[in-house]
Amino acid sequence: MKKGLITTFYKAHNCGAMLQAYALKKVLNDKGYKIKFLNYRDLNIEESYKMFSLKNKNLKNKLKEILKILIFYKEIKNKNLNFENFQNEKLEETNYEISENNLTNVNKIKEDFIITGSDQVWNVDITKGLSDIYTLNFIKNINKISYAASIGTEKNVLKYKNEYIDKLTGINHISVREESAKNELEKILPSKNIQVVLDPTLLLSQNEWNEEIKTLKKEKERYILSYIVEGNEEQLKIVEYLSELTGLKVIHFERINRYKRVLRKANSDGPLEFVNLIKNADYIVATSFHATVFSIIFNKKFWIVPYKATGSRVTDLLKKLEISNRAVNTLEEFNNRNYDEEIDYEKVNKILEKEREKSINWLIDAIEK
Image 1 (cartoon, rainbow, N blue to C red):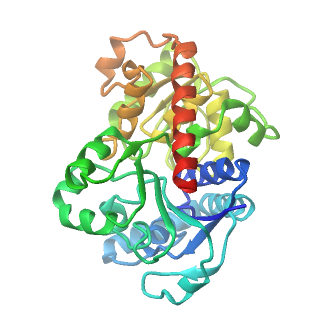
Image 2: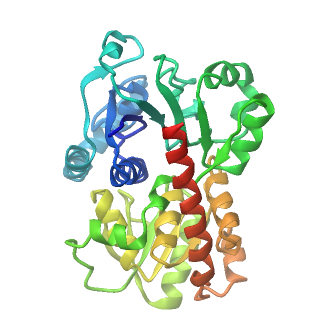
């Protein structure tokens, strides 16, 4: 049995980050590999999800942070607890820690291969520069693989061209999540055979995800699920209009309610509760990549308002599955569509199954080479 490590944003209190990490681990476990997550203290990521942080904030923003904690303390605490429970139960990590400033534990790594990704591990806007941990430059004499790594936006490669060349050259097998990332990286790394593969969450079938959430309950009422990565007024207008058209209430993940008809807030829910809410929604309106992914997995009626900073992830996936019409940018554009339009999921599922098989085969080949 080969052993491997994964390095990714598995500690981030974000549904997509934790679910993609778990999905990749589960796929490899099911193929007979023993997998752990590299216990890496990514201070940039951890700072973003701390319950209380005053770091690098001016006085005005510090006061806002304190006020936020006073108002939403219980919700934030419950969310942190739900995510920490998921991490502890599902994402086994190494019993030693690695940091960019302290690599003394590198000699404890005895695995056969190491994978970086998925997620935006090569997005310099998030990692504050290309990290040696996520580009696997901190270790030698091991099979280095990237799986569905994301650069965020193409402009990052143009801006940091030399750094990308220097940091990614040592990776044995490179795969990314977006066609746009493949195109940009191939320009600067012509010797690399770069592949586009599915996000790990798409490697598990609907039945496999159903098994993960089988003990969770359904809501008592039908609902529209709204999931926003960052404030988007057009998305809000679309949700409100759809609620008026259908008479359905909204479940949302925001701390402050901005909707007229609300069933409940779900901002304290954990990763699997997020999956369960998508499975049982009548409609999903989102800006999120992983909300798109799980809407597709569960064959739902969904509409996506692509997030400006990382929208290529969503649009590339929709194009691959031949459902680009599910992306809208404005309420006016949404009004020109049939809100209740069915998706030809027989066709989508066939494409997805083919891509799933191709992605898994690429990953296994990369490990075994």
